[in-house]
Image (cartoon, rainbow, N blue to C red; front, side, top):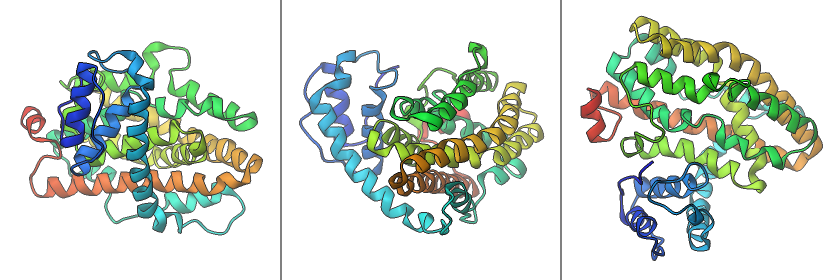
Length: 328
């Protein structure tokens, strides 16, 4: 994958430094797009990296220091934004019940319902493009947490991940199923192909998962995020499937979402009860971060859905300009 196009002062310095093998000299961002892209680039060094970048830069102390500063800002903003959602959790001693309270959050805007009933084919394709940034590495961020758990929670996470990673069949990797859906839709299935075209709010969804997964201290947040992701997936995927059927989209698109209707109905119980329930039972102080992670998932998805629908209601593209023209 090639380095993305910069979106501001810091991402410009970062991309040039990574491409040239030089140190990064700045740390000031010029807005949300600059911040989220810079974070995404720094995180991607821990996934598949970039063709132009020496793999040894993954642990470059200067880059780690830069990332830490950006993460501090991102995490603080996220905790502030998620506080009202965290407050929805009741006083139950049983974490899965509190997770149900949080995932019942409704901001009055439903992206799944819009795609089910109203979206045009072009709008549905934009949705697939936006989600490709995560789904082409589906479940990878949460895999970082496996060595940070023990006992029942670790076993349950491994069980869930085994399914996400294809159950021993490469062709059944959920990321591969998504790539198939993109390809049959006439879109580029290459990992990271659309990074230059997705806006900051979509990058934030991905960056939160990487933030949680790459920090041992945030392992509770990572598992809370996973639980909320699974608990809010089965019904939306049914709506996405029905929208794809309404628009007569390719079979691979329908198959991807159909697979998740059933799989995620099972996964939500594993994630909420066997992972988060066991985790907090073994380490009670992690409860707060579990709830924060769940709230972050719900909040960021709600923001993304609201912004996408708002753009479509104005007959605008949700994508950055070049891809908006390509998809249309």
